[in-house]
Length: 441
Image (cartoon, rainbow, N blue to C red; front, side, top):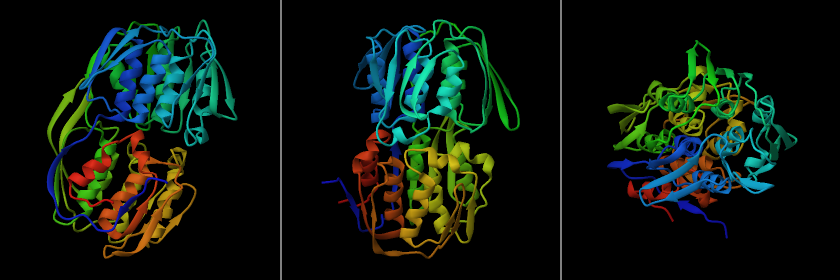
């Protein structure tokens, strides 16, 4: 039988403090870069979700020694192109596009063929967006019509490339950055604005990277074949995971929440900017810089008067993982909200823009959907009294968690399937929801 969560009551008022597990993007990037360092690197607060654990499994298959301890993780890297593996191995990226795409960049120098596979959801996503630029380094790729499974055969002498990233995808940009590490010469990337965790890690590691920030794009130059020293890293809390509790607090009555030590990288806080424009009360305290990243404690309070928004498209890339939640705020705002240029949402674990419309329709919120936009007619007085079933969403963890937040704040009798989907990114999500007072059956 499918694992189902049933929610029949909205959450009561709460005043609490929580911590959130390590940022998923940083956890995966730390592990991949540590594998290329010469010696032992150590991380603390590494997210132990399926996506990160699959990253560690893939690295072990590539001959990297890894120890997972109670409060830390150790990786002993063999240096650039130091992977040691058997012929014709298969790496399983599971549900993780970040893993599948970024590790491809590290394999452009591979000596034998390596196959990358993923789960049903990941196998529907576009990999030509990384195999095409990575192929310019000289590596050979065989794909399934641009999708997984893919087979990589590296080149003996990767050459530097010039690459234009037009989608605002940090995964595509980072895959090429990782490929540049093993290339001869200087790779130039002209990239549409997107999250910059990879750039900040490269800078912290003192790798030869130069970045010129323009209004609409960044110009990045990376010189390859430079030694990476081992490094220790404390992973801050994940802003995307924190967003579920920001919205839960904002949409609940008379509630207050503190979330400790969350990553507030400027390329990731589009969700905060959008929510503040809509009237959500969020304050940053104890702001500090850590190895190039900015972290802070977040203080959130209930928001009684939510405003509609014509969402600025320049915030899309920095809030791409949080739009399902933002749409819930729009559903309770007093007026019509409009979000456009969001076709990238349908390149995620499920067609999320479509699922946003489905969830809103089930809730009784009028919306108009196109292939890349959605108009939401907010109803501040909405109280749901009917039964709502959420299933067949390709086990997309964000669809599941967004549905839980909707059930706890709008009411109704909800049955939400595929409870195990949260293991990919946020295994403790339901425990934290229960800690705040939610009744789940």
